[in-house]
Image (cartoon, rainbow, N blue to C red):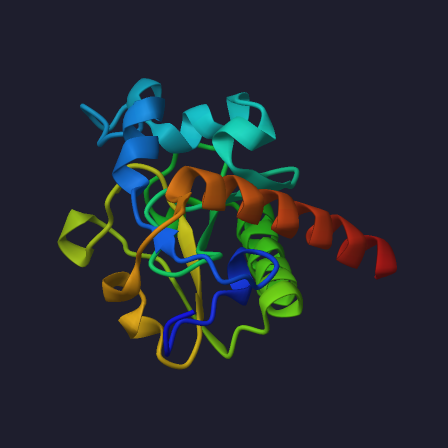
Length: 184
Ligand SMILES: [Zn+2]
């Protein structure tokens, strides 16, 4: 493996470099930007209707769920979304806000346990002006960080494609999450 790229977050360490082709999977799934802000056009409304392996859902709660990002900033980049099509954090009920918090903590525990992430960036972009890609449906980013991870993108290479990586990552995290919650 190249210097500075430590990818425990995507599975068993191996010596394959990764081909960064998230656009291909997005194309396959028709997951491009929604045409408007309606729930019919909304990927975060559609994802929970799909089987977990197709939607890349890692964990389902009562009111919210955790899903892998199709355009990860880092391996294991998750998002926690309410099922309800609401845009703004102030629109959440107390119960939704509580479950988003619970799933966010769960995501941190799981990603840390499988990948030894050194840190996290956690947060919500509220509105297009603030950088939300899909502003119509609230989502909280959980982005694991490793030393040197800003060097990830230039060092990509050979064998594995992002769709395979994302599928593997989803299985790994979903299984680990189920195990961790049994142990609690
Ligand atoms: Zn939605």
